[in-house]
Length: 102
View 1 (cartoon, rainbow, N blue to C red):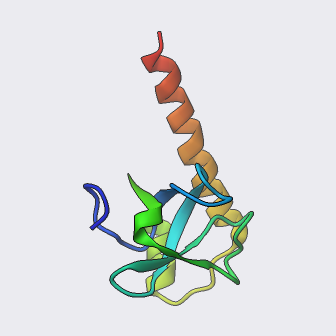
View 2: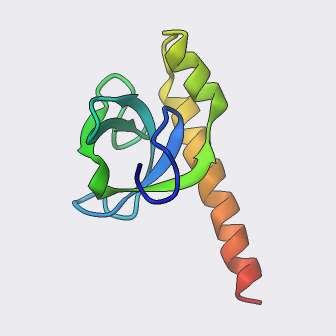
């Protein structure tokens, strides 16, 4: 568990450290109890997801059920799908931040 949200495929996670700090990724695989595979379709492509330690990720509430279903069914993921999920999350986050600052 990382934060208050369980680690599941399709969950969005924000990087806490490294050159990708602050960037949002989608969990596309679980390596072990301490590591996951992440991709965003841009910096990290679906064909070569990055293995990252959970302590370097901040789990978000959002889970993409469509991504999770494709991974579980062993269907190929497209980079565009991940980019769309991340962009949608960033748009909603920006809207919430703007509404909170009124």
